[in-house]
Each structure stands twice: as structure tokens, then as C-alpha cells.
Image (cartoon, rainbow, N blue to C red; front, side, top):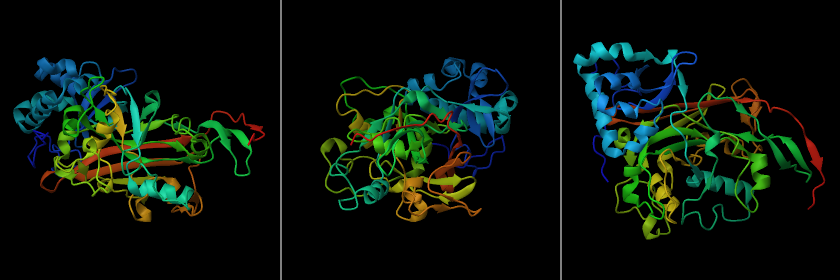
Length: 425
């Protein structure tokens, strides 16, 4: 479907927010915040460097929609559907551009530095895909050098795995180094803290409207179900992951934590960022063939900072599989979507070494450690390291859409408790 109300052009706001601000009127992302100890959470929308308290504003100015924001979560808004999403967004633009509303709304514009951001919605199911050809091929070259870099099915379907929704956390939540079973290079099986902790820079798609069990979601219905996008860091313990991922996929190497940004950017804000996806070969089966549909490639550029140093700029534009194809495949067997489902893209990487979206690639599995500005090197994350991921996309009339930031700092494992076992193999 073609989105309606894809966002304002460069219009003037009585708030003084600049047209070029990443959180200008063309973006208007939604989040949840608290502004004092033990204060109840409220829904807000970012307006430049401020946050408009929507829970209070709608109670006074839009009482017929106030229930969408009363609970201090985006859950009700997500479930309301595309028509409501568009109406609310258009209402916000009207409020912020008509100075007759300034008197009521000015006291409800809070400095972003004075609030604490919360998890914006209740995560229902979490699925992480493997949709970047560059990333998948690099992994293949590392671990299957004598074989084709890509598995035989990779260009036929968007592969993915189900994660744990209960360990999805909001940006700035400390990440405790996981402990689990792993196999050392010499063959000994041990239990203890991961020594190969990694990040993965990804884009997440947040489901609003659910779908019925047993009814697949076609490519053309994507925008009816997806409310918006956020940033995702799919933390990964590579040593745990590689030992457990035979013959099945990752479990404990991924399930300990996944971080998301506190802001959800409406799909309506990304109209100017939509581009054609890459050419796919071989031809796709009809349920995945998007050649006759509106394009849903997205021109998003991510930036990864490691302890404050920019180390990578992964380009989302080159992703082989789009989010509509991911949803079509996910539901092709009759699986349903639920409000609050989080669909992650998988690691975003580009062709250049400084476009790789994880340390596994940046250090080539430790064979070429990443050198930092202070002279230290990293193959994988050390305790105390902080990873920050930001992203921008083109907006209307030369503006820039900001997707905010997702960051996390590594805390030491809670206890050692290491034991060693003889390898039965």
C-alpha cells in the first residue's frame, strides 16, 4: 500500500526546532519516559532536544484519543492501526505549527536531558533475521573457507531465529557478560564467562496491528502491520553461539540480552528514504517476489562507536532481504503477528572493511584485532567497553531523519564458577 501522511515538509514550528534537526517535525518519534524517581511512565514524542508529554497533552487537547497514551506505554497506540497512527501524527504536526497551541503545550515540552527513557513497548515475540549478504558471506568465508560463502538456501529465503522477548532491554541498560558452556580450541569443554562477546548493529521493525493465525501476510500488507522502526544491538557471545549452534541455531549465545533504542520512528517518517532493493538472483518464489510492489529498501546509514570512537558506518541500503519479505516469510506457514512483535534485520554490513557491523567481522574473528585510538586492540568486547549505535536516513526536502541511539556498556560476569569437563568427542 502507499502510505498516506508520510510527513511534513520543512514547516516552521513555534517551538523553534530547526528544520534540519534529526528529531524535527519530519521525524516525531515516540517513546516512553519518566521525569522523577518513582514517577509513573508517560508517552512522549521527541521534538528537537525536547520531549512533548503526550499522556498529558492528549488528555487536555485530544480526549477522544487520550486512552492511547494513558498507560505509559506505546502498546495501545501500536494496536490502534494505520488510520489512527496517521491521524495522531497529523494532529501533532498541527499542534506544533499552530501557535494557538503554544500556551498549553509549552509547559509540556521537557528537556530530554531531564528525563529517563524506558522500554517503549511490551515486546511480544522477537525474531532476528540474517538478511545482509555481505555479513553472511563474510561469516561463510571465515568458517567455511573451502565452501561457497553462502548456504544453499540463503538467496531463496530470509533466514532467521526466534529470540527471547523477555531479555529485550532499553538503551543504556548495562549488559552483563554471560556465562555458559563453550569449547576451547584444544577441545576441552568448559563453563564460565564468554571470552568472545560481540555486538551486532541492526534495524528493528515494530509490529502494530496483529494478523490472524493461519493467514499469511502478503508483501503488500506490510505497512498495515508495521508501526515504525528502532535501532537494535543483538549482543552475541560468539564462543557460546558457535559451540551450541550444531545442529540447531543460536540459543544461549544470543538470549542473554538484546538492546533497542528508546525511540520508535514512525514508518510514515521514512517516505523519502525508500529505495529499490538490490537485484535478486535467482528469481524468487511468488510470495517473496517484490518486483511489482512499492519498493521497501531503506537508505539508512548506521554509525557504530566503540568507547566513543567511530569504527564503522554500515549501510542498510544494501540489505538483500527487505522487511516486507521478512514478514511474508515469517507468516507464510500461518504464524501470526502480535502487537509488539520486534522483527530485527540481522547484522548490517557493507563491502568495505569500515562498514562491518560487528566485531566478528571488524577483527576477522580475532585474526586482525581492531586498533582503537588509545592504541589498545580488541578482538571482542572487554568489561567496561561501551558500544553506541546511531542512524540517520534522508528526510523530505533535504532534511535528515534521526533514529536516535542504542548503547550499552559491558559489566563483568556475576560469578566465575568455571568447571572443566573432558570432551566426549
